[in-house]
Image 1 (cartoon, rainbow, N blue to C red):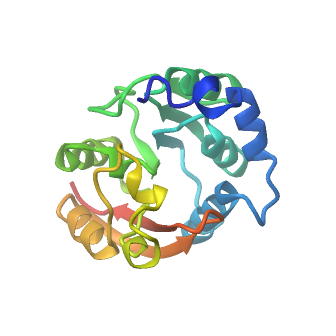
Image 2: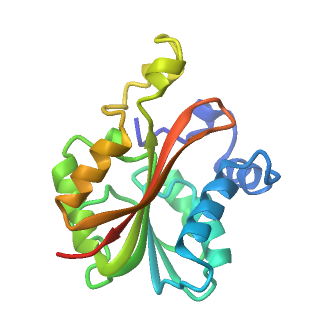
Length: 212
């Protein structure tokens, strides 16, 4: 599925058309704008990361926007879909690996900010995945997680496309993610549930690594 997820036959637009469409949405209709604005606001304007890693970076639209905010940061991404990884490499200044996130994909690099949007719901082994995140993040660094919130089960019909996507293995609550991350040395900073322009509820949560 991931090999063909952004194919033109599947999505009816080229990768570059997708990239241009997303980055040119006005702020009112751009989910990308709202999440990056939320991250910057919660991390305070004076905070500056040296290295940023986006797990499941897609076509690079989030990295593109983060790069405009944090102009001195080095950008990195991991993306399993080949033409998405190629797109992000071409359209951003990030170093992109076409692979699944595992271990330490950039060897000796340590990150002050890791973003992981709409990824955890696809991961079979959450324990191993969170351990790899922890090992890649500096003490005092932050991880931003965005996942489907369980409140959708109360608000959307059960035949909604939100629940029919075969790759979704999990839906999350803030309480679960907070406790799970705490067991890996993280402390929750802030969270919110935001309704998207597509009328779905996404849990947005910012964690800080406070210990190994």
